[in-house]
Length: 504
Length: 85
Image (cartoon, rainbow over all chains, first blue to last red; front, side, top):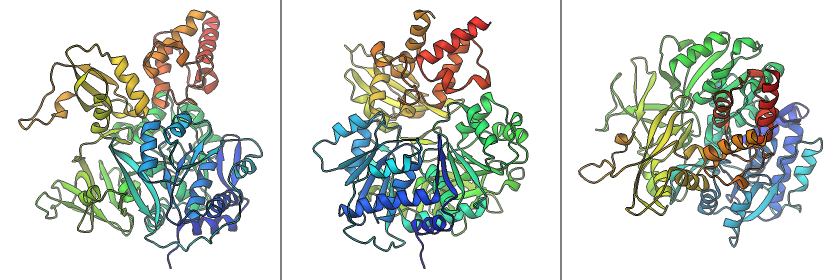
């Protein structure tokens, strides 16, 4: 029988209610407290008559409060829509409206709260403000902020194909792309990850990744479903502080993206702290330079290092490289998770022979239901039962997968996908811009950064600062062009399309 | 501590993260991380600025919020390092 993650979490929490689920700032929430808080969220939604499948947006930074909201929404049979806490109000408002959210839980101290609330004025979205309190009574404070009342309906029994969550990925500004993941997707992917990482209640993972994106969500879910402790680090700006916490809390696992490890190793030496409890580290979110992997292994030779591959459309994870293969298959992202099938198809539609490059396609219980309210975009990537990832790759003779590039026109800044078109549309709206092209440039820490090349109108006096300031008001920080150049024209193909690769 | 040092730090942050010269956009005690003005890579750039432009070496153990998470904290930190030197 199908078991949704809320049911598994509830069982885990009831078995060991005193165990710590989440350690954050000065407080630790036990499994019992987290369950109680999530049941309070569930009952608040049911009391207000929120129907099954209703979308509930969450703009709350990583915290136990976020976890209680997420699990409470799922338990009520509603769909959680975690919003990117780094985004700006215009994008957030469009996403809330695009998914038709009934409720918005928003962090009281979030820098965009006021602007978002103003942007949503006049809509029928009910906003509930959440205080991220880390005092001794923070669980009670959290529950007091929720609307009270008796549930108007019993929570429905969740089915495998029921919508669990919508995660927005970078689309163009006018057309947000919300990846719809089912309860079956989340349960299957979580189980697969728990199995290859061998997560158990003995584990203590430290998370610096935001829960609103698929990698961070998988870290949250896999820990709570295995009864492990999750330590949340509010930000990763002070790597030495994070390392000391790893040492003092006897952390056993640390997930990151390439820029996480670049920052960690940039100023610190792992061999100077006691990481003897650390069992594994994981890396996803784009290719990590080999020298960086080697430095990590030299400084912490006992730690198993997992290179992984996935995308939001596949819930989070598609493949992983068993650490013992790291030396024999350098550059590989490994083998599919149990139950997942990966094939490389050539343009003609035939499966590529080993060594030949084609588009990576996948099918399995983790492949999304589609994009919310966007059948055209769904039809572009879900074809004949396969998810077309947009990534180019090949397999070796033993079936191990290697990534060779990205077919779709996306820039990866850190681990975040950025659509050049989204940034172009924002800049094009500035007075004085005749035309604009956006491309990727190499960045030592982030892998890639954004560069914009602008053609000004004849009479315009537009400067770099105005462009960046405008972008900052409209876009998450990582989408702001690091370099802005002005040119007299943009390189184009004979059909008039901007040749972005020539802008770098 | 000189106001000039504070203003130099504030000007750097305004120029590079808020893209403005309007000093009212950044209070001297505003949390740079809490307000979402810089992220982890931005903080690395600020440390680079402190070392290159202000001439103060930042040790690993000094990379903590108390030293770096607002204009005043950075200014106090730089000032105390200069006095100790």
